Image (cartoon, rainbow, N blue to C red; front, side):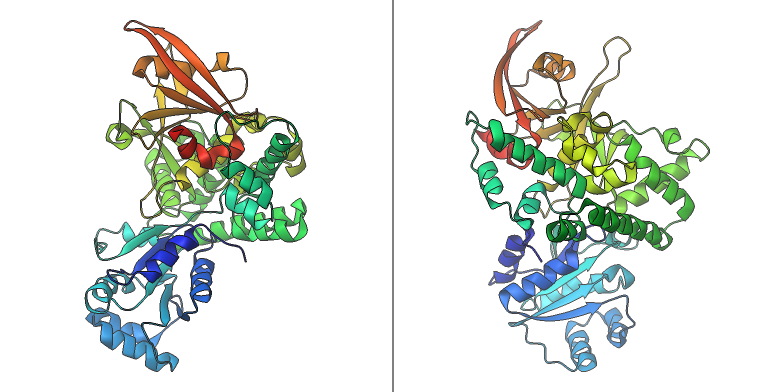
Length: 455
């Protein structure tokens, strides 16, 4: 069992002396939601009262009455326990199997706020998306959990010195030679293993890519078996075809006919949406990038997709782990799809845990002057920052230079396998010269991008 960054956030939630709300943890299957709650209870010395809602509990008959005291009494009686709110943690797991738990959260907050209550569910988004269900806004706290990040991966496999070097790096510091090469190797290892907790545990224990691939294949099979549980009218066989097609389309504007030329666009759109609700893929929306908020200018019709996890993507693409670990430039693997997944899932994970993350890209589709930038973010100074995941010299970053020129942006970022560097660039425009900083970062510094932009 290894530490998660989210655990510190849950510590703060649990320790709140007043105003603590029931906590709803959202995330895909097998990203570690249940384990995280168990770790929290153990860490804080709380008695964990864990209820898997896929089981036929008798107390569920009390939920419709929305009477907290009656429900607590029924749980205590059924489990033969005394539930002290100050020393216990009530945990409803797989709550999508019993949606009646969710309206009760409002009354835990209003009538029994002393109780620590956590709810999780692997397919919770399907319940939350139903028109008859309204989430008790303002009365619960939301928390998003994804796969382990690269820095969590380093901690899990005992690479503390590498983690410290990354977190203490500043623009202009020397990061060349054996240190840079080792960090690149670790980033490539993460691209192979990914951040699914079971895969990371297998790698940590065996250092065997064969063992890791077996674990990841099992996770992918579990996702496919879940397709029969998805709410809606999508054929599970179509969901499987779309799920299998997504990896080869990662990082490219999604055209439904490329998923399955024989299926109707409406059916494919529903399948993509259901995979999004299951958090097996993320839509990266096109934005005009004229300013923040980026979402105000997003185009719902034009989007790219990335998957849940780089390691799972590698397995679905059938790439050979040893070939990826030995490659000199990660951006060249599978036309850059693996590197774009690596960067995209970390930009997604960097959003505050209480917010539903969103990703954006920029594209100009003109016949004679088309251009595309992989990601667009807003930094802490509310500046629009374009990000490219691309190998090669800075002179080849035509799309990045074009958006800087058009939008008069002061800074741009490029991720590749070269050592970090900062270039002062000048572009001529009709309004005069535009000066900007081009920050080139290796993939292993992706989680430090906010701090480095602040420098």
